[in-house]
Length: 101
Image 1 (tube, helix red, strand yellow):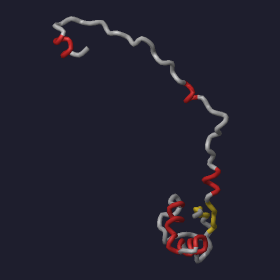
Image 2 (cartoon, rainbow, N blue to C red; image 1 turned 90 degrees about the horizontal axis):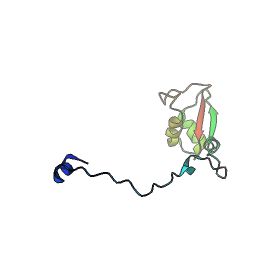
Image 3 (tube, one colour; image 1 turned 180 degrees about the vertical axis):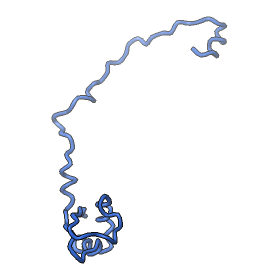
Image 4 (tube, helix red, strand yellow; image 1 turned 120 degrees about the horizontal axis):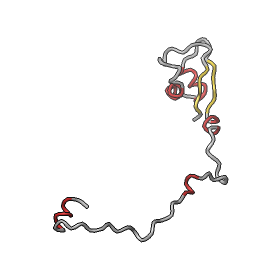
C-alpha cells in the first residue's frame, strides 16, 4: 500500500490478500535432456582449414589459393586477429586458420 492509497482510504489499513494458489515451479528448464545432446564445438572446427605460412606468402596469395579471390584476404585476417596484428606482416611458420566459404 502506498501513501496515496493510505490517504485515499482515510488512514485505514486493509489486509493484503494472498493469491488463491501459486503455480508450481517448472524445473524442467534446469534438467538436462538426454534426447538432445549439447551442441559440440566440432562443427565449427570442421568449417575451417589450417595453413602454415611459407616465405613469400601474403594474405592475398593465401586467399587466392583457398578462395580463388585475393580480395577475400580479410576473412583470413579476421579469423587470426590474435596472431596477425598487421595484415601486411605475416611470418613464415605461422599457422593460420582458414575459414571455409
